[in-house]
Amino acid sequence: MDYTLNAGVWNSVFAVPTSVVDDYIKLAGERSLKLLLFLLRYGGKSFSEDELCKSLGFSEKGELEDAAVFWEQRGVIRRVYGDDSGELCAAAEKKTVSEPKPAKPVEKAKAVKPVSVSSGEIAQRIKSDKEIALLFSEAEKVYERPLYQRETNMVISLVDHYGLKPGVAMMLLSYCKKAGKTTPDYILTCAKDWADNGINSIELANARVLKLEQRDSLYESIRKALGLKSKMPKKITDLLEVWTELWGFNEEMIMHAYDETVYEIGSWQPEYMNAILDNWRKNGIFTVTDAEKASEEYKAAKKADVSKEKPKAAEKPKKPSNSSFDMDDVMAQIKNRYKNGS
Image (cartoon, rainbow, N blue to C red):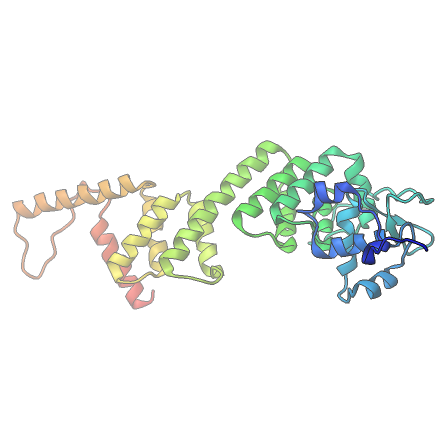
């Protein structure tokens, strides 16, 4: 009589590296785990992309690449180069593998388009360059998940395509996350702007981020005041740029002009608000305190003038000759111009 263990499904098992569970179980996506388990199931056997896509049910373009890049960057999966098209296998198995090709230097270009670098090349860059490794780590914090291939190419583009230093690129990614704008296209558009304006030091990047955050705060205030739920109209953003960049008004002053506009004509009109700010600019008034002080001084002078000479019934009290700023007259002129369409 023979005896055997009735192990059922346990008669056929395969090993999973402990690091997969200890280090990556929280980070790896579903597709990445499916790919790794499949490769481990077949030991050191290599599979082509077509074979893997068919076996794993990956039908979308780039789906396999997204699943593989997570493990390649961490040295768990490697690409076997036998010809122009690579095959994937678990890195734990001993097989003859050619060294990953070094990343080719990419000439800085103007187009907002990520460079195309294979996951194997990026994995090698991460392994050999600590700053690049930190940059990719920061990128994963931005997305709070493993990067997809398009995002991976975007990150390497910040350095290779636009020439940003890794530390500066990290500051750009951090700002974009805070602003809630993390699409690759938006990040690359910002990178192009930074590169074109020579923003490639921590000091310059910090100054730009501060400026952008102030702008975003102003945009949000205007958006809330107007009840906008969609993208800010270009007409308004252009005016905001003039008021802040060219005329030097801060958010508090611009919102004060907004309040004055609504008070005077009962609604918000950008042209009317622009006229108010332009008048303040010409009179050297750049704080709410100065604007209120000028208005109060004129009202006081006007009241004193009225008490000396009673105006005719059909006449409006004249402005004192020593007043350099007549808020009421200015508001009346602006209102008349606005109503007449001039």
